[in-house]
Length: 335
Ligand SMILES: Cc1cc2nc3c(=O)[nH]c(=O)nc-3n(C[C@H](O)[C@H](O)[C@H](O)COP(=O)(O)OP(=O)(O)OC[C@H]3O[C@@H](n4cnc5c(N)ncnc54)[C@H](O)[C@@H]3O)c2cc1C
Image (cartoon, rainbow, N blue to C red; front, side, top):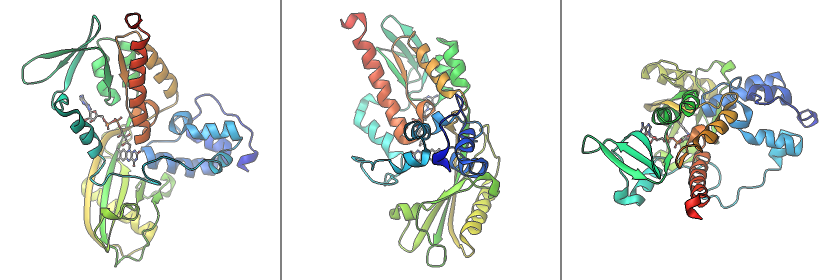
């Protein structure tokens, strides 16, 4: 039926309302919930669709249907890998490689404590070998989570501080389960599963890490990564490691059948890790970017701006650089 539903929707429509309008109540309750919970730890009733996944609205507008848009998606060309990607030594090898490229211009252990507008740029006060260190710079890109940006911008723009502080973050917990693949009947092929909350599995979903990336486990062994709501955030869930592991195993057995013999169970926590683009998010971010124009050259980059995927974060970094360069090019001194 979806292709026959007319275009529509209200401004700042939530993911839940979008799915209900186009696919019906059941799809909104199950599909939208599984998508939102599994990828962001959030709630489809709170997130706005244009920020969560702008393609959904684009497909509706351009093709009159989400399904038609999905089917007409061109194959991605020029990507370094096709399908899901990872880095062999873990994702943190990306920032480490970038830091290594900078050589001794990278100062990792020197947290910035305050920013102060200067004649032509900023004074940056940071903690270093001496009590107070200051450098003067032409411009700044803040690639920090929203709360850390809010703290640094509070003395210079109360409106920016308020917008940044209003962005809620969800926490995630992860349980890595290693098992003997010869003893478990479940076929670990494919991606994994997302769990709508209505299924009451107690987990958000799981991926077959060793099926997607075989080097993640030794031959004949498997590795699954289970995602659960985490502790400490606004959507927090305060559970011990033991309970998180039990819940994860319980969910895996319910979904894939009995016989899972665990060889390894590791718990990880990502507190306040995923920003939640709640209703009105895009409007607030536009206002924030507008406010920053009244300050000396300063740009923002990060997952709370235009999307949480690594790809979106990299794009926001590129946008920040281009924004600063454009600003300098159009400044009176440049002409
Ligand atoms: C468990 C989990 C799994 C994920 N899986 C995927 C995935 O499979 N694919 C995908 O595309 N995306 C995934 N994401 C999302 C993606 O990883 C994040 O959205 C992205 O890494 C965020 O990048 P960022 O630069 O905005 O923030 P961060 O990577 O959090 O960088 C912010 C940096 O600021 C530093 N910082 C914080 N406070 C201060 C301060 N006061 N002073 C100085 N520095 C500070 C932090 O130490 C950190 O280095 C996942 C996220 C999580 C939590």
